[in-house]
Length: 134
Image (cartoon, rainbow, N blue to C red; front, side, top):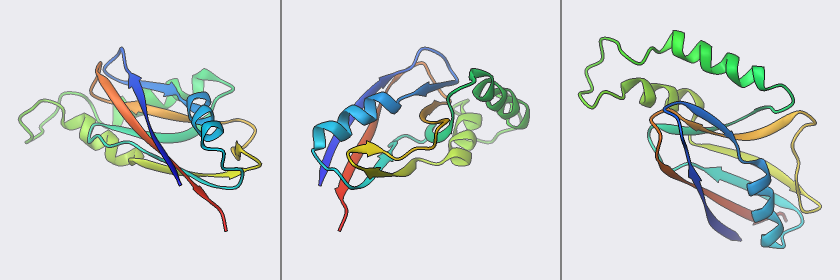
C-alpha cells in the first residue's frame, strides 16, 4: 500500500481543478502496477468528482447549475455563512476510487479527476492511496 498527501491551493470561492496528472504522478511513485487508487478529500466544504476534461464548458455548466440549485446566500441555519459549501460538498462526496492497470489510472477517454472547492480560496489536501490488486 502507498499513501501520500497532495497539496491543492485554490484561488476562488468555487473552483474545479483537474488533479489527474498529479494523482498519476503519485501512482507512478507508488510502483504499484495493478490495483486501485482511492482519492479522499478530508474537508467538509470541498469534494472530488470525475467528469469530462475535453470541454471546459462541462465544468462551467456544473458550476452554474450548482449555484442555481444551492445559492450562496439563503435561509440557512448554519451561522458560519458557508452552508452552501457544505451542501455542495455533500452532493459530490469526499472520495473516488479509480482502477490502476499497468501503472496507469484507468479513466475513460474523456475523464479527469477534479478537486471541487466550494469555500475558497484556501490551501487544501487530498489523500491518495494506492493499493495492490490481488
